[in-house]
Picture 1 (cartoon, one colour):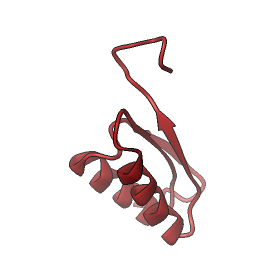
Picture 2 (cartoon, rainbow, N blue to C red):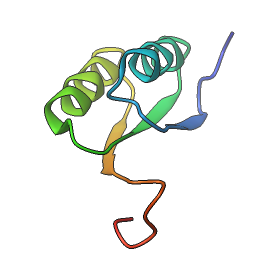
Picture 3 (cartoon, one colour):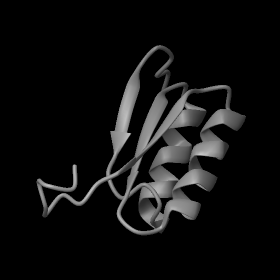
Length: 70
């Protein structure tokens, strides 16, 4: 799969499944925004892996259940 030039948003990107999806998207060539609720360190680590693939990343604190946090 070639996602060069594409961008993706992974909600829950600091969790196990979200991180795996983020890694796969970056490996396929996508820039990836990663959301987290409480584990900023894990989200930063996943974002660093995205950068390791030569892709851009963005870390966003997001609670999908609370519109006031976003």
